Structures are given as structure tokens and as C-alpha cells.
Image 1 (cartoon, helix red, strand yellow):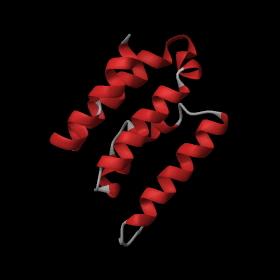
Image 2: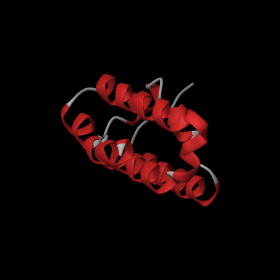
Image 3: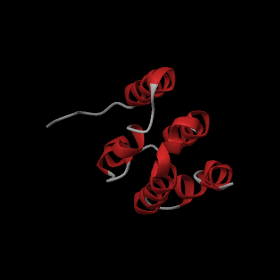
Length: 101
């Protein structure tokens, strides 16, 4: 199944490639799970993917600049969405950085 592979593979581009490759993988995942709203049944797998991205990605501003990061976050619903948003805020708070518009 595609999601089983994507869930494991996401660590490779996040750890060893640039943000461009991670962005491509996120785009591909979005494409695969958007058909027939399959993402509704894949919340645990999608959450696992975003956790791996957040755990291994140190350049938070660059993460938000990816074209497919925010659309990926839009896939989450209900309690999973709340948990992902908490993780995102926790990750954001770990880094000492200045935020501007």
C-alpha cells in the first residue's frame, strides 16, 4: 500500500535531502490521499508522517515556505488535527527565532 511506503520513506528526504525533495514527497502524498477523500481514513498514517517531518526538520521557516506543507496540514480532521497542531506549536517553540511578516 502506498501509505505504508510513504510513511517509512519520508524520513529519507527529510534527513538527507533538501526541502525541495521533501516538498515533492508531500505533494505526491496529497495527490494520492485526496482522491475520494481517502485521507479521512488515513489520519494515523498522515500524523505519523507529519511527526517525522517535525522531528527531523530543523529549519522551521523553510518548512512553512514549502508549497505543500500547509495543504498537507489541511488533510487533518478532528482530534488528529488538534494533536498535529499541538505538535507543530511545540516544535515551533523549541527554536529560538524571530518571526516577522
